[in-house]
Image (cartoon, rainbow, N blue to C red; front, top):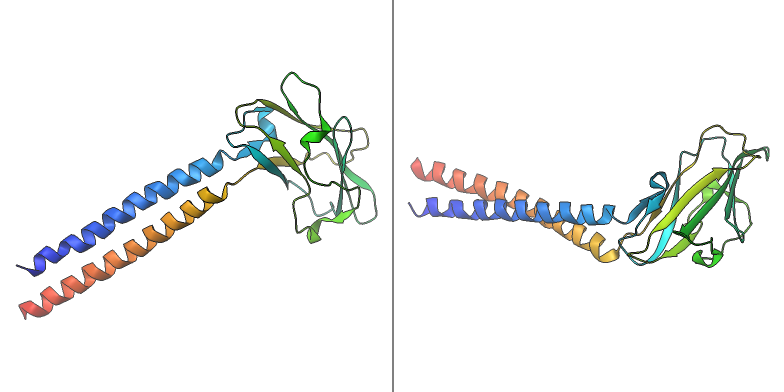
Length: 195
């Protein structure tokens, strides 16, 4: 009869697993709010601070990339290995109902050509304020030869949320494993005790 009380241990561990899984899911949802998609056109950041640009939909023919911060927009050019322009895009990120301000770009952009496969850092970052509304646009210029458009996302992943998500996922996994092990041990003890 005393051994049957031990079933409380795996039940408690399973409850811990459920609670920490829910918390990890909530942290994931909070992290998702740190992504601002250009496809939405008008966005309101949830978090203050620097957002870094993530590129997508680049083809194998896009070999190098050049980024230049101009007075009116951010100029992005990709070229193939023979220096032919593939994508030539003007990007603007500005507060709604205001003119583009190049000071929104916070890192040192350079016109240096970067091999895309060797890229090991973010190409540019922008400083955005929570609660304000921003217009995001990407426009192909006349020099663009690739029909496919480039995808771009601005992202900010607060470190405390990443840490909480990792911690909750670890606790959920560990407590689930220990609940299975403790349940197996209790059943084995009861089985041996019967014999």
